[in-house]
Length: 105
Ligand code: HEC
Image (cartoon, rainbow, N blue to C red; front, top):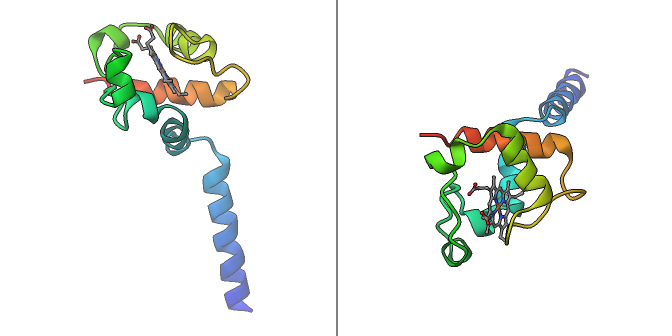
């Protein structure tokens, strides 16, 4: 009986952890959707990133833009940067902007 209780508790706890949107989720979204161009660390150090002259997310040029501007670029796209409107939720895009902010040097 105790075992079952403990197992149920573990499941509930795992569900709780995954139900709240967190940086961990933004990191996973980033790896799945953005890293192939922007690089695992956001430095743009990929073949695609170099070809497209993607700026390092930690650079002042990227960080000086407002949250609204970064949100806009991710939502609507810009140049070769694809639009994620309808592909990511607003919460996911907000999470990605916050994640980009964590890279500031
Ligand atoms: C197909 C490659 C590609 C993918 C995938 C991609 N990007 Fe981009 N991204 C670009 C390019 C190219 C630019 C530069 C656009 C420009 O300035 O003309 C850019 C620019 C940006 C910028 C603005 C940076 C700056 O230089 O001001 C942000 C923020 C950004 N991307 C976030 C993301 C996020 C978040 C994802 C994933 C949801 C993503 N990108 C996926 C290619 C990509």
